[in-house]
Amino acid sequence: MKKTLIISLFIIISAILTACGGDKSSSGETDGLLSDGKLVVGVTAGPHEQILEKVKELGEEEGLDIELKVFNDYVMPNVALSEGEIDINSFQTEPFFDQMNEERGLDLIKVADTVTFPMGIYSEKIDDIKDLSDGAKIGLPSDPTNSGRALALFEKAGLIKMKEDAGTDATIKDIEENNNNYEFIELDSAQIARQLGELDAAAINTNFAMEHGFVPNEDSIFIEGQDSPYANLIAVRNESKDEEVVQQFIDLYQSDEVKAFVEEEFQGSVIASW
Image 1: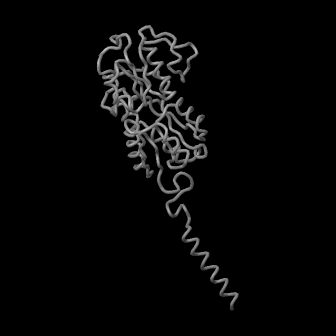
Image 2: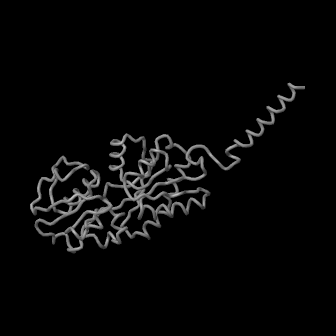
Image 3: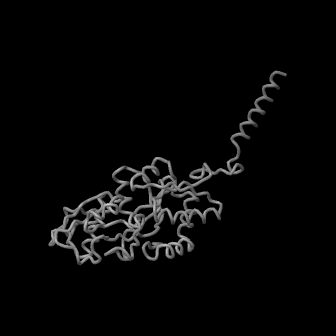
């Protein structure tokens, strides 16, 4: 009798645990990134966020719950992804991504291209790049990747000549010729647009320029062309790269609907790169 009672209690307890633990498929949960029922995507404020709002809308139509976590800097979205606070991020160029991965020892991986934000040169004092005076103060981003990109843009605009082996991580020390004695001032990328009035001109990333109210194709005095090598990307933790939901997110982002949205909303200031 006692033995029978013990066996009966064991069966009851097992049934309760099974009901509480449940079959993940029956409770609406899945393994991996969607263990909590939603995909958390890190993005920077501005155009990236606008595009992801469209992706989120498309996801809802397919039953994918996407939550956006908006950042105002270029470092934390990768740190948050590495630490598992978010599942995916979409905000950065490949050179910057590679640099962050190497410097911080992150195990992140690129899974797709997104859009290109042509970097532009802006000014509140002149309307033509040729009107820059000798000794003009010119701002550029202080982080190595965007600094090198800005210097390449200055060279393309005819302001300077860089050393032949300068590369994408060039600094102002790699300037070989500066015939007009321009003063180059390195500033935080997110602050340059706000400090433009104190400068004669500055190279500003498109997302920060647009956040400040500029229309890049109209307000810049010089801008990268469509051949810019600085396409942005979607990144995930290496362990997550093969998950089905990652491919679903990529398909949503690289859809005809998102491409049409980018073309209509940004009028060439942001370019679909897939």
